[in-house]
Length: 171
Image (cartoon, rainbow, N blue to C red; front, side, top):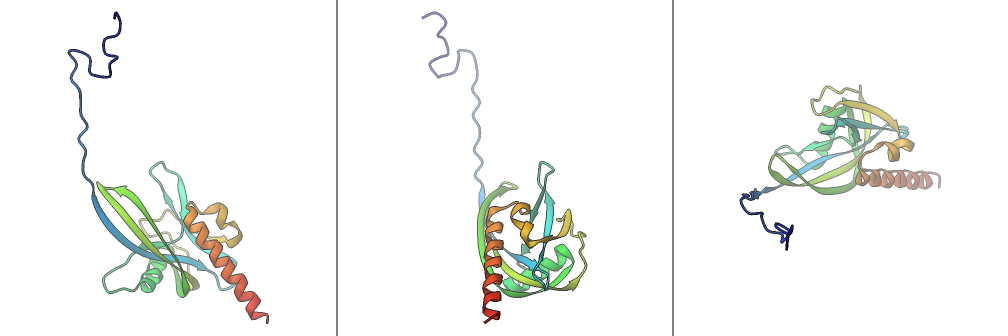
């Protein structure tokens, strides 16, 4: 048939085909800890802002890698201090989030242990190289500010715990 050359799905005569080489990614597991840091009045929380690869500022909870010999609670307290400048203590476990991503030719399975922490002192600081901005944000605005749905779920859980504690304290 005239004009049907190359429509069979195969290469046209005289053309070389390129095949993509599939690079096998190394799979690694990473574990981090951090959490939701609230002020003593439980009206505000500390968030960190990081720029994504498109230059957008994404707000999230502070977190980081567990160092040798550290518990997840110790890591959460240390990372909060390093990333925000705020000293805090752990009130309770809040939940675990795990997700996958690809970076530097590695497929990463990341598990993050989150805690509910209360601020003890310090001043906001964005000196950590991984952090672009740091801010105290009203708890009522976290749903619209946090970039990640899993973290928004943790914040809702924390608010439910606060409400439960308030009802229990009033008895």
